[in-house]
Image (cartoon, rainbow, N blue to C red):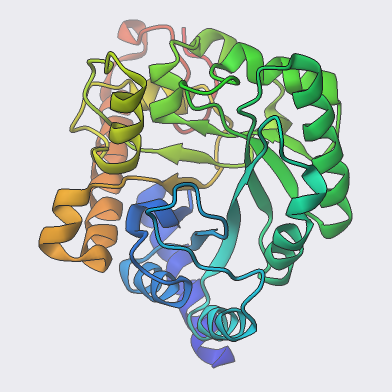
Length: 314
């Protein structure tokens, strides 16, 4: 088992060096939410991902729930599959703290994430009270820090922490060393946040990014925004979002997590095949963009950050 793990990790590093210019890829659970955690790990290994993100809490009553924090048998099976494949857990989700939630209620979830070897915890703050949300985020950071976890704040545009400016305010107010900012390309674009502002933020805030595409037209209702986010995302290059521009404003080399739920496609080809197609399509698009950028003469390059180096071109 250990030899298999080492062999697979070496193969992944060679693949990354040859094709991904230093970026590792992670499979978000929402991309294949019908798969249990052990099944998701197997699908990620077969497709060529380095990591997975595991969903330990239910966001809606209708979605599947995988109670890793309270199901010892599921935890054992997941850890065995991780050990057998060499896949690692990059993040767990979701610490979603609203007005009536208490940060300490998420302690067992944090502990389960640490047991799985996770590094990050995706956090959302759907709370209209600007003081309370900072207090809750600060307390959760303090609970997570002894476990070696960062709290990475995500800002879906339909929530009360719905854009980059408000998320930045929370991080500055909290002032915790294990806080972070999760840029989801869809949420960033839908919120109308500024790429220029993004590029000026502290680099240490960014630990990974959620990558996808979507139609350029923004849905007019909250229900429409949520439906697209949960069921109708597109592979990078298929939609109207400035995927390369947003990623170029982030630090080089951070993992790219593919959160690309496509209900119809997954129903047609199966969740595991959908995960494989997502990785292949993303690599093709981002590598093509990078190659095209390198082919443009220096005096014709626009003023933007290079997608691989993160440095601003002139």
